[in-house]
Image (tube, rainbow, N blue to C red; front, side):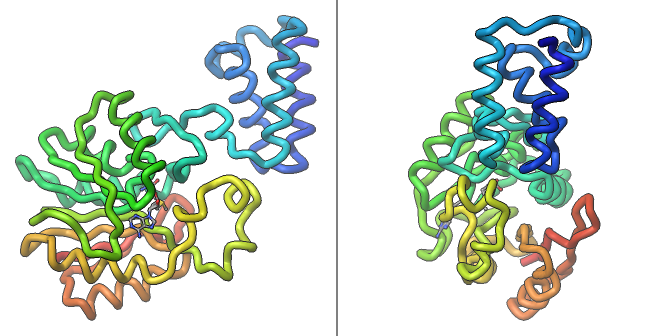
Length: 273
Ligand SMILES: C[S@@+](CC[C@H](N)C(=O)[O-])C[C@H]1O[C@@H](n2cnc3c(N)ncnc32)[C@H](O)[C@@H]1O
């Protein structure tokens, strides 16, 4: 079978379980052959050998059981970075790139701002801010030692210096004063867990997904560690932006506003201490 035929068949197979079947099929074939996706297109008529075919079948079979593509590939892109990804932490999402965008906007013009990323997971937000705002002094905290180990690997992989601490946010937030506190906290209610897609529910760490009251705990605790005029930037669940914004106003954050993601859903809320 040629690359082109194999891609067609794998796409058909993955369509039963994935909304991005063709893309998945290409990413997995590129991974199996250690090529880029673009290189596949210059080689569509080439037949695969038996070893390549076996390797590819194994990857497609994992994906057809709903294992997330990022975990199969072992890495995923986030803004300008490629980060190691595995079940120790949540896979960084496109909407979280907007959190980083809002943070960079709020940090603009500051010389050596201090930033705290609460629930850092892979380190995505912390590393992207340190990468894109040179001079930023960024601390990432997480209650999960496993996630922190992965974040440390990502700091080493990218060569970006950030401070990473094991810390439970329910004890308050460490250090400060900060110019900005960012967080994408777990915000799925326990009762909602069953409604999530199998890719998410069955593979991503529940400590990264499920949480009640954590957004509120961060908003309260951030008041104690933000310098006057510093910013809080939060990712929120779909449909929660207005209530979180109202809560920030109640906590006397100023200039509270929301930002929509690429699909028009309000997913980021920010306010000024
Ligand atoms: C939704 S994930 C976000 C990961 C990463 N910031 C991102 O956006 O891709 C939430 C993170 O919060 C961490 N977490 C959950 N409960 C926590 C707590 N009580 N204190 C600190 N971190 C916590 C989880 O381990 C997880 O890494």
